[in-house]
Length: 498
Image 1: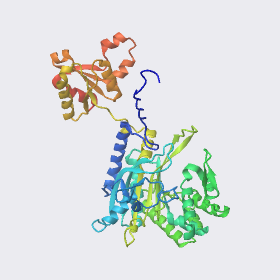
Image 2 (image 1 turned 45 degrees about the vertical axis):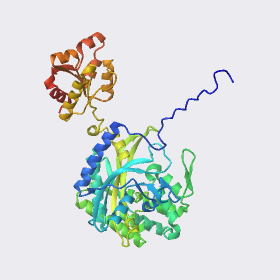
Image 3 (image 1 turned 90 degrees about the horizontal axis):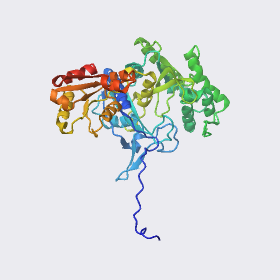
Image 4 (image 1 turned 30 degrees about the horizontal axis):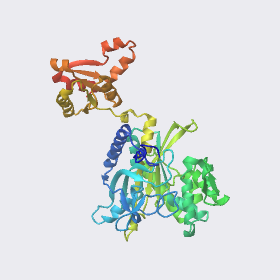
């Protein structure tokens, strides 16, 4: 051992700053847009008579049930752990299962039908991928205790109103409606209707639910032996025969034919369940027409199935129809689904001796946020940063804090620069990076003259871009003007346009 080396302490390794796979940090501009979106949607829900409630992030695992799509093993797809009492707990994977528990637990005191909405994060312990996260936000509205399809029709109309409330124009979206009973009739017609075929039916449901992503040929592969994706991963199919696949395909394509209900009746109407589903679709269509939503906003579409297993009747999906550029191929594609839901008459009944009908709709907030970004919706655009009060004199910090307080009292976001004030240019750089509309400037000269300098950072940036000479820029100080100290709040309001 070399002299001086003995006993030398080894430096501890630095932690690596990283987020877990499938999780992400959310930046201020997205938070502002999401808050705006949620406010607009909640206003629609409220106008239909729905009240807000909150349920916990954590539920007993048995209360949530095993209804997740794309998972065959018990309790897969959820984050679960045991508490001190050896009870299994799970993070909620949607907002519907916790609602079912809440209604069942408070059944006697709640008015029926029970109309409520909820928003918050949900968690899926699934393989993450591009645009597919393990934590994401939803906002739901549900009616529990109403068996009539009038409740389903109302949900569809409310979904259409939500799309328009966040700025998506009529014609750029459609609410597509189907009925699980119709699909159950198809299953019976092709010979997989009994309880012994339950797993096959689940696989068929999941295959059809991927129609918008894989196309009809991809769905046919998943109905048959299976499909290999671009990465080489193979997904086992439902194992249907060519004749059975043809029967399901005719059902999926029925929406593209001229006589929709005639084709649905030929495929699914042989079974009583299928006939019930077709009748319910007709009733929903009648109610939609009567309420003035039959102008293409809400349409019947047999390809809608929804992936969750607990749906028992009408199902619906909000799809955006405008084109965006595909990042992989560079070709224009339809944006696709931003929400959906359906009737789940058996979910609350797991806790109760009687059957409790229920129906609801969920908006995928992250998807809707991406849609609004694609549309470049100005009303919900990048949030404005705070007015920054710069610091020119360290011993005047109390005066700067008073200025910021006066701005806040007037309802204006404001902060005092709390970094190193030595280089004034860096303070303006900071204000610019914060998205500040203007900066307040006061040094010894300003305090002596009882004035304040206001720098309009938006106008100043445009004007500065047109000045090539640095000396001229310093002399002109584009976008900057002085006002009396007692009138500076009004001057800032003028810059902000408030």
